Length: 180
Image 1 (tube, rainbow, N blue to C red):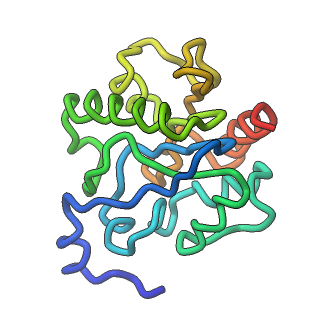
Image 2: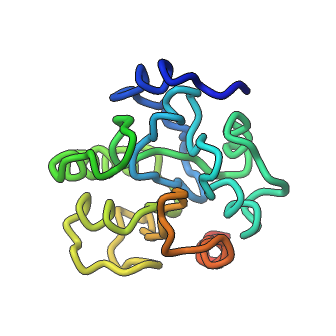
Image 3: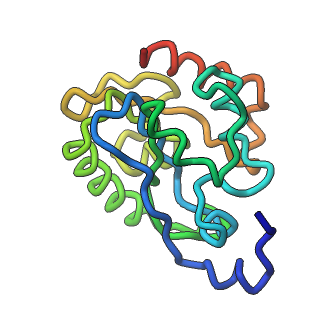
């Protein structure tokens, strides 16, 4: 894979990514929104430095470290990827609160159609806005969507300095152990 040019990154502004989703997944991972790099290359969590793929591997979700262009290999393992807001931006703080609320409603519809065992929202702020839960904490939530359990994990973005790789992998592992 070649690195996108500056022009390609700029052209990706407001672009979208196709969901990686199927019925009855074990876990549907849900990012905040695609970054410009991901939208430019057409793969979720595509920016070098994003810790999603290393956290998946370190926590035991994947047998080896996958690269973003190998995302389709998650489906046979029972995992998928979507976003709360499917509009690419340089940073999530460019999104409006109303976009999160609308994205939460779309996400609920996806859950009703595809019925994953667990939904893991990767970003506590996104979860709080999308689901109207301003005091939500990390981990398993008391609420469900039908039979789907809701989890909140930290954003794996390299911009999220609150969680280092080991701490992120530990939280992902808690989800994996509960999702078997």
